[in-house]
Amino acid sequence: MTQSNTPPVAVGSHLEEEPAGIVPSTLRELTLYFLRLGTFGFGGPIALAGYMQKDLVEDRRWLSKEDYVEGLALAQLAPGPLAAQLAIYLGWVRGGVLGATLIGFAFVLPSFLMVLALAALYVHFGGLPWMRGAFYGIGAAVIAIIGRSAYKLAKLTLARDYLLWAICAISAVVTAWTESEVAWLFLGSGVVAVLVKAPPKIHSGGALFGAAPLWFTAGLAGPAEAGTLLTIAWYFAEAGAFVFGSGLAIVPFLHGGVVTRFEWLTEQQFLDAVAVAMITPGPVVITVAFIGYLVAGPAGACVAAVATFLPCYLFTVLPAPYFRRFAKNASIKAFVDGVTAAATGAIAGAAFVLGKRALIDAPTVLIAIVTLGLLVRFKKIQEPLVIAAAGVAGVIIAQLHAS
Image (tube, rainbow, N blue to C red; front, top):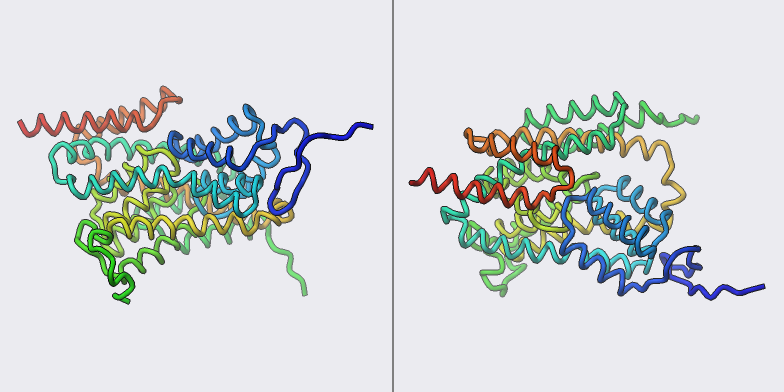
């Protein structure tokens, strides 16, 4: 009788034998992988999840298919950006809470630093004609990308379920009509889906940053007060706790608060923030850091990012040890289906709302149509390349208008 020489690996907080066919790997190797993915991974949450499957499950065989599928299911069930939650879960599988923390930090940090740098440039040089021209073109391209993302997400999550399509349509109309995301509509959609698909069985302060340098809290409107930072923390934590599925689902939620409710940014500035998230690698939700910077400088960026990703981290790490017990619960799955359908509709509604501001003339409409055509015709084309080309086109058009 032979004894296996396969070393045990940490799974959550327990030591288990590595499944057959799995290549042993260290937490350091996995952390470095996610640091690279966060630096060079483009394409949004679905593409990033695909990279993880191909690299970690199929090519390197560091993780089992079962672990990946369970992580993907948890990321879809819990609120928060899908790609970040999947990364955090895979980190938990490899190294428990420490692994989840390291992987989550490594995955988000590169895009956060890039967005921080872009936000600083935007604040200091946003008034230059060439930058205004670039975002003139980029904004039109982003509308096409958001619209196509809503279509792809609908195909992926709604299938032939007429109830979910109805919820999606209602959410799209409400978002377009009110020009904001209605939180109760999300929760109500989840409840309706549960009642129809899996009905329950009835049994019988300003001194907070007193000595901080002014530049650390300075956004577009100058230094922000501690009260503003607290509002940012609360609002973005609420956003992080209500986002299901695609990272773009946070766009209508943020629009309702950042532009309409608090009036921190103008419509164009908000669209620019979404565009920056689209041209940087990593999770799309990192747009919150750009918005936070415009409102309250580097401090606002840090507060917004931490507040948004903390619920995502907690919603992944806390249920991870017990996930297999309730993952297939019909009521939970039905609730998430309803919320996801509402989120998909909200994305479509947001594309309409933002499109009214971005598609202001014939050139911007043409840029949006060309962008959509390229994405449909060439399915493997990288979105940042299309956005960069739209930015160049915007600069050229702006120069032609000026001359």
